[in-house]
Amino acid sequence: MELLEKKEDIEKATNALKAMAHPLRLKILCALKGDELPVLEIVKYVGSSQSNISQHIDILRTKNIIESRREGNRILCRVKDAKILKLVVNIQAVFCSEYN
Image (tube, rainbow, N blue to C red):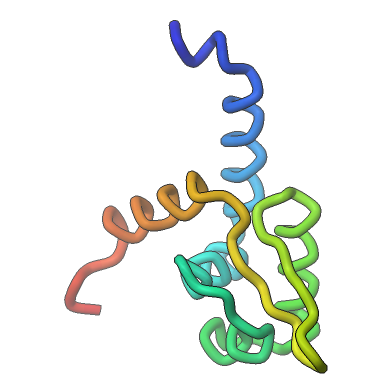
């Protein structure tokens, strides 16, 4: 019953899960867990082209999942909400073996 009273939280969770439902976006979020990273470092971690990663970062930004800032010639990204970080950590705990 408590969840039904928090429509805002339900919408936030739904939007986050929809945004994360793409393999590259989930990898981006895994790369960012707890850290602020430059786009080029995210590209290395995820293993795709910079333009492709930038497009997915833009999607995550428009969904209010991540935020970015410019520092010199670098763009630094980080997860915007601690609840999203918690969700990513839980996804990793369930689906990622400690032996990977």
